[in-house]
Image (cartoon, rainbow, N blue to C red; front, top):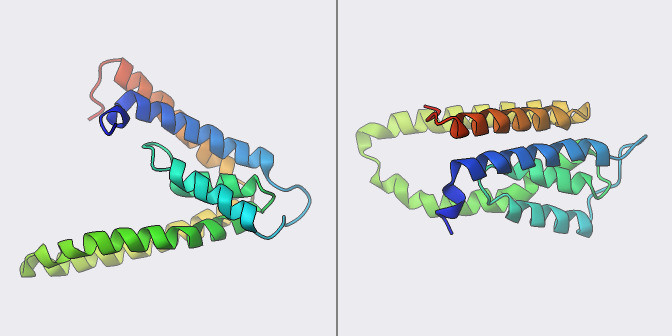
Length: 164
């Protein structure tokens, strides 16, 4: 199964599908208002989307935001809800990889700490950018980007290029 999902062409196709999902979120967003508060249906849709996002090329946050938006929640509120949905998954991954920290040589701890700090700052800034984009109902921009990246990737793969 893992080998089937490691096909570069399949990943490029799934990236294009991800772009179409992001574009659809713009069509499904609530009109003329803030939308409704997330509820059980939003949680179910977001959970399903989070499971689908295990596929390579599918964005976890993009798919959950799109799915939650489809239940009538604003894109901005969907992003907040999606972020809270990610906390258990991120915490679980952190716990599973936490034992790897003990294998870092003492001399490499400082660079690892700097890397952690930089990734935390970039993650925070990225989240602020995303919330700002969603506040203006511009999720479709990420959809266009994913579709373009999918087309370019598929062209490189089918053209025999390594892409590296």
